[in-house]
Length: 387
View (cartoon, rainbow, N blue to C red):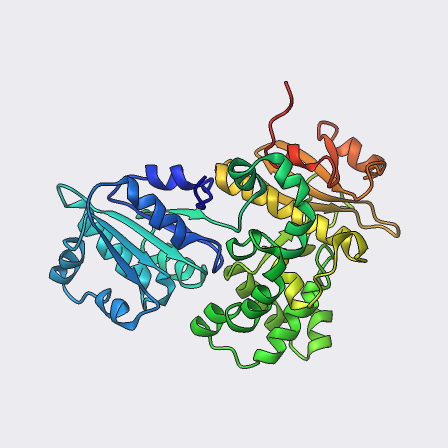
């Protein structure tokens, strides 16, 4: 068996036809470059690979004339721009390349990766709207690992994935995972954010991320967080938005539609990889002995469902639900697409039940509620039902 673990988005990326560019967004070290190196093998022709960690390659991607743009496209029938957020004005560069590519009799294949959405959101989506297809990439999903090994392997190592995460560097060597993750935290975690945005209070950013690490699954109050760290509410909000754009965290909003007493503007925060989260608090103790096991399980389930929806492009969105009362009722997650919805309650005990209250059941009578535990979760991660 090959060491390369196939990715769920591989065919979707390969099937995207020129002249449009394919932009792959995901955290650093989640396997974007490895995927493209494997994927381009299926196409005929040479590959021109721009590694934008290299200044020389960045300079080559700064065309000043239409002739310069055409010269780039003539380099190869397949062009990869890796870590494209390092290229100044990358949105306009892609616009020029795709516009010129549309005029070619044999348009080249353009693949672009970015470890953050900072410039690729602010630059590409404004400058190159309609000229690219975006695909999200995350650390390995349970379905991808099961397709490579099997579902028994996934169940056996489920607790390791919750403690050490699912990045390629850790999944095949859990013994060295703590050192790998600590080194990532120290040298790589904030690299894109610091390179692309001027931040004056780096230590307070670190304090904020550490505090968020202890509050996964809890409703976040920007003002109280700011008071603890010594930042304004607006600065805390800006930092959290930047952390999400860098794919370090995901913000989950509250869901409301029918009830007056539903929380309407609440936010929870989860980490895109639990190995990174546990490195931030320097706690790699076993899942079975952890006081934060419930929060870890909730974070893990959320990211697995998010990966499924991003990979399948099914347009389902994730929320949490909570009522506003002295003893509020809550559901961990609600998935919504159009008028269809289903809810999930994450529990550690197989005997636990969901209790959203009668008000929720009356307002949303057609919404099924699933209680998900580490023992029954694989079917919610893509494992086929037994025949």
